[in-house]
Length: 387
Ligand SMILES: *Cc1c(COP(=O)(O)O)cnc(C)c1O
Image (cartoon, rainbow, N blue to C red):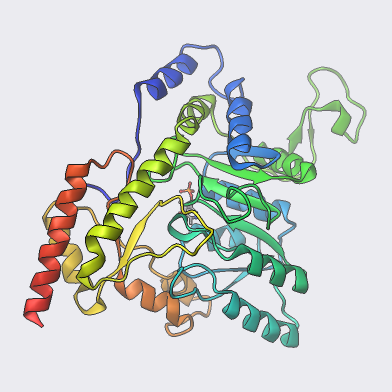
């Protein structure tokens, strides 16, 4: 089976992990901070805080932004459920903003309308979380301007977008946000097995994230509120978690981040070939607005909804692991039970009806991609003949 996404593991990655396994320290050793420094350098942020998953990174970023019971968090329905779930972990309430039909990221026009209404109703959001869907940066300048006007903080869910460029700077430089969150899951741009990262330019936020990552405990005498009792002493100052990344994982992440440029270049070349080869098939193809550079986590085509399910099954039977990103979050039973219903976010729902993610990952060979393209062409002809 050709999957829709998968990791690219080199011998150097394996050697880096084995070196940690042979060392004295498996977690909280020297490799974690080295990975954080490399990740901060790659994104252009002043600080990188590594954690155990992208979901943990979202949870801690929301907490560090001051989100708690009574807070309101807005995101998009076209994302993985973790983006919204992490707000509930904090005790906040969640609402959604519909997406733009072309970029499939948060629509500034929909955000502006919803903010006007929320101001009248006295329920403005505390936090707005755009998602850089498929690796394409959301319309950050517009979203950040609206957030500033209405007093909301912005956290970017960039789990798809390590290595992307938002027109001003690399995604993660936080040009338009307080914090930017990445995932290191194997299908994402680089992997640590599991892992996540929060990038920020704010030293106080970075310190808060580090505290919350490890039980709310500090061992730094300079940060203690009580007199330090001795070299064994630590102080719990907040309710934190064990969201640490092991050095085993950090070694993989550090080795991988050295190939970030190559990974994104290969993904971009594969996407460009899909653009050319699929142009005549009558499918909706992803578009990148001028000035932006996608990290190309996903290549999502818009298939005619009437035959999408059939096409997905036929492609999987041919050994092509196509997928669907995303079932709108608000349509999940868990979220319907919280008051959401079909019809509320029509653009995300229309996107879902036709969405089909094609295989896209650095190790996808030219031959494999050629096979995918040929199968898609044959399928489109069969669908047209049946019409
Ligand atoms: C993968 C992903 C997450 C969660 O990341 P994990 O590392 O799997 O916890 C959150 N948001 C989006 C948009 C993602 O794609």
